[in-house]
Image (cartoon, rainbow over all chains, first blue to last red):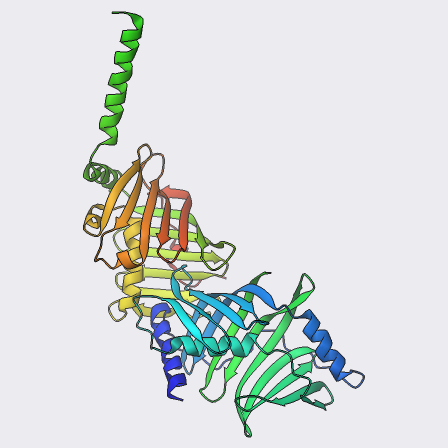
Length: 229
Length: 213
């Protein structure tokens, strides 16, 4: 817990670099998912179809807004993902093109290659950023062992994970992954929502991503600007 | 004296005079530039920032506009890949970006990180480079137009980050044409200025942090 709180402190320190502001309540800046009946949908087919359209190796340019209580800051992120090998690299720049930090990592570890010298980042900020990248981009397909719950307008895959229980929710007109969430016991720890999938070279990329960390009460909003495959 | 001797003497004289020009001291070149830029009261220019990050295959391009009004107004507007504005007036910074869509106010006094960033930005855009001789070894790469190379001296903050900075001036040497920064990480940044206008009136909208409409 202390580690994550320090991670939040990172974001606040970064906010010092790019500015602080007061905000009202948050809203979803993306087109809401249009829920339709899934009565005729085959859950396992949905999983396989989605897996085949996910790119395993790509680079994306995003804008990222971090929100914690009344504080917000935004940056431009350049992210390189290899979800098969579970490798990632990320560079964050401010809007004037000044590099804030550069990280490289895998499923278990992360290395800080660069951190802006003027900002005194807490020791484990890299871990906090890496955890969010893994939540968003890794393990996007439920495993074959996942239990399937078919609701009226959504299909839920539920499976145990290292930290608790993971749920994958498929819905919408194309039956795509719209939410991934992690529970510990009955408590929801975090959720990632995916919006407005965009197709490039036969692969799908969400144009909008929102990560909500319910336990620590922070939120990330990621807007896709460019895909480089 | 035959023709060949005359040509040789003329050639030697021209080479000597060229050599003399090239050996103009760095201080002379810098003070000549400062003199040329000293009458700039306002500046408006477009910019294209090409960032080559060592770990990415492609260049990242930021485009926008910069405005300057002496003595204390500075505006940076990024238009691509995302819209962002930063207005600096004295030691107060106002920021806006399209994602957050709120104006943020930051005091440089309370924010040393920001102070460093803005200080660096102002330093390279000012064209006043004489004070940089303490921090950098400056060499004149080319004359007409002037091109300068700044290599950080050891035991300076820049030494740990920057390999060198190269600045190329416009033909008339009244402002900068491009700034190239090569970093120790392998990253590089090329900031090119376009449609630069000096001492022309600047529309009030340039100093508005949140764009109209």
